[in-house]
Length: 313
Image (cartoon, rainbow, N blue to C red; front, side, top):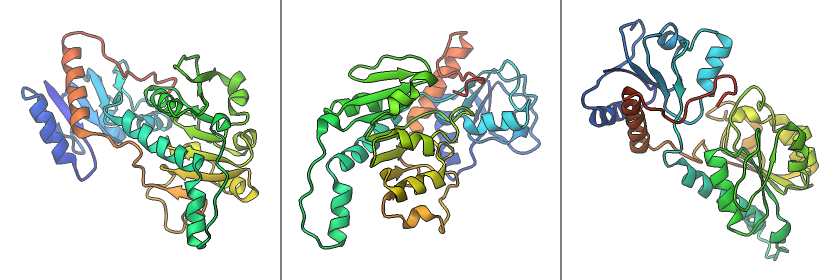
């Protein structure tokens, strides 16, 4: 069994060592430009087109992350990048759900208890007690009810705030009021106090966090974006903050990463920035999941996480 490996980051060697331990019978090689030798599987992150195009010998392509937008963007811009009839398989959770729930819950509770406003008062040396937000009307809307979104929504509901969830197709999540499809999008947004974005990045969801979306929320709402920077129209957010339609935003993802030093988000006191850390890919869990799926495919068994190329996730 031959595995092609491509990960253009500093920890590539550690990933390769873990794969060798998990699949000792496999011949794993790091892909280099010009490598066209046969392989059975490819394990990649943001690969160049040359690595994938024409690779009809592959039995599957494994993406080292839950988001496959980079690979799908290659296919969109240069059709034929993905070999026909070769499944593209994404990571499923691998320890991301608890991390994401922690991050989002912290941000939501910070806004619920007005700790962000107390930080401002501290800088101004003002001793002032703020009226708490009523928990029963502090509605949180979660955009995207996949594995991560559903877990986040249920975690938030356990704190007693009203939680809504939105997805492309109808889903049921315990203790969450769910909405589905374009026809219910505005009803989902109406009156939401905190909007959490966990949508996959597809052509349909690009720029979905825009002026029209913000206008449907409760005045003074907050935004938490932990999905992709391409979901957000940045100037629309700045305008909404300036007008008071939005009171604050917590952003973990950006169109350009690292965020440029001269970006206006850095200087906006209502924007909280973190460097794409809301849910880190856990190497050991990820390697174990991919190894199990490779063994299952070799036995002729079905596996989860196969991407619908047309839907983008």
